[in-house]
Length: 214
Image 1: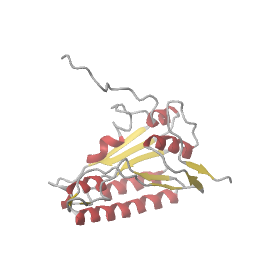
Image 2: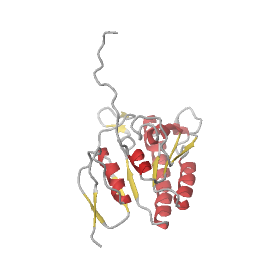
Image 3: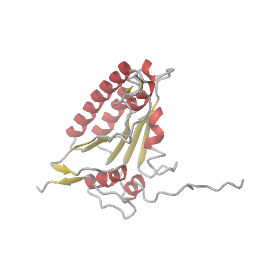
Image 4: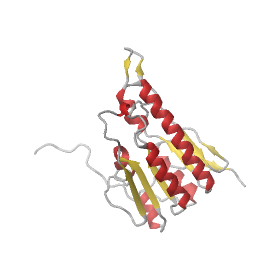
């Protein structure tokens, strides 16, 4: 009872979802069970609140003992619903998390990891095609690595942990230049720039792209 809290919880004011909602825009959060909290609770700054205009789609993850048994997980079903949402043109922002490269990477089984990456490659191809069909823009990135390192070089054992490698960021949209570096705090400002919205003062990051002059 006498222990002092070293890192007390703190509020994250004016998150992306809150800000977009305040502009009267519609947004969608979509993932399978394993990553559903990441696109809802975590993305909303640790708050359970659903903002006005925020829809959510939860696709059940497969009921298997370990995901090497089904490395595609529920990505195809997530993609079906995601593509449908994009083509509907009813959302100004869509946040999706694919679980495969993390969850299958944790199994340490290379053949399953390869299948997971192939699955995501196919799914993202479908998503980008749908976005381009309706004139939408896409950011593809990650918050940490895992599947890119499946063998521990020091002991030749399977590597099952997250990595600290830099992650890729792929922007699909207008002619632009991406700046080097960047951090997760730059994602929300980048999305707002893509949407043509001013960045609120609470956001400390900065947009990663500079659009070419028309």
